[in-house]
Length: 457
Image (cartoon, rainbow, N blue to C red; front, top):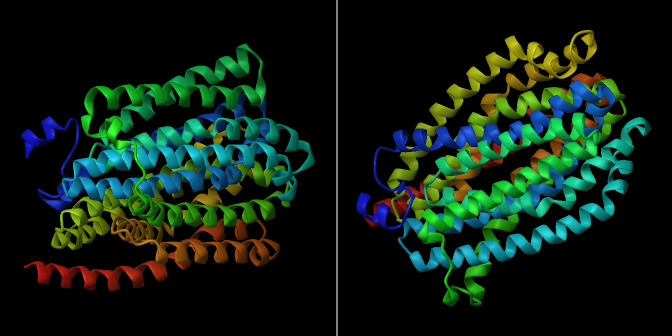
């Protein structure tokens, strides 16, 4: 097996070996990569908040849900497309892998261009629809319109990284994300402080770093991963295979968009509480987004593991891997919650400095409420990504709709009643609402998998 891996480049077969060990070591670089990805937003928020002030922080922060709304769809879809790639790798169908690269590339480009045009055209109207405070709407527009203009770069980097992970390589995407982040950290202060470009400079620096990351990733694939090299004969039309990609990818994209719509509704309710609440939410969300990365990383790892083993028809390994991943991920969720509860306020001070007691108080409340529900989110990620790794798309989409309903309920009823606490409760309510149908579907699917295993035996 090692000789085969060497022949095909830097790939990792997840269908052999002890499941817990494989998943854990696959997750470690994946976790680092996800943290680096979240650090993009962290660095934006930190530099903008410290050097341009609280209003600028609020302006960048209120665009987060809009970024998720647009980027989430295409990034979710490309993640779904690469599930098919992983299944072909598990089945040792190398021609199928190469054709999957063609399909992933074409579909990602088409969707990202469409999304970019829509985003640039309507982002001002979306900010107004969200009732963005008048004092920050112009700055928010200056930031988000540039991000939307460069959305293709985000998507192509995500797609290339997902293809590498589908083949079991979680290390190189992490290195590329770390490199891209370092470039971003270097460029943003130059754009904001030296060139005095303000918020547009922060967005432009982020886009430029993403472009460089794409170039590095493409060069690595061309040099080290021959399985992903597309040949002339791979460029053909196969309706059945394209539909298979869309059956997995589109529901994952819509699922992300459904969740993002809920985030937009919550942001609308939050905007009504004023710039202080918006700034606090922006800062605490950056801390929260990094804290949840272990649980999300275990979810992505189990998707790659499940996809490969499903393609190889190793159904017994899927069940064993899921059980062990639940223990690992829930343990990490407890650690992350304790860290946020005890140290969250100190981290929030990094964004706003001393003398912003109300922002810090609001931020600590958010981190505490969310931290107490991290274990629910850990289960949600494992159930969702396992089902997606198996090619199941309907129930994860239903779960996304449940998350949307719960977030809207929090925005409509709880924010008026409880103020900022209502905003804090939106995510835990959404996790619980989404986890219930996913858990039911997972246990039903597990029974089917075990029957398949018995038949194979």
